[in-house]
Image (cartoon, rainbow, N blue to C red; front, side, top):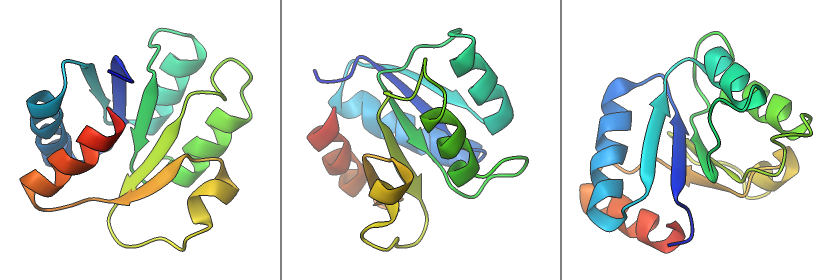
Length: 122
């Protein structure tokens, strides 16, 4: 298994539950979801949580995923945690890399499609 501790930062509870179910069907990784990006940033900076990878939604209140990614990448203690932007709608090809993300995934509506995406990374 490539990643043992997976963090999803997403304000949509249903999307997190869908993601967790798909992840559990393909991996034994420990899963955690945080729904408030400001809280997530503080927990990361304070090292209260130590994910091996972060799946980050872009469209969130309080702080967008893009703003959160920028904070993560400029904070020495957490800047090397891989981040996959995981949101609705397509992104320009260079978009994730320019921002420092590993990749960009469009949220699938199909359970098997999400399982297949997760199999490739976890």
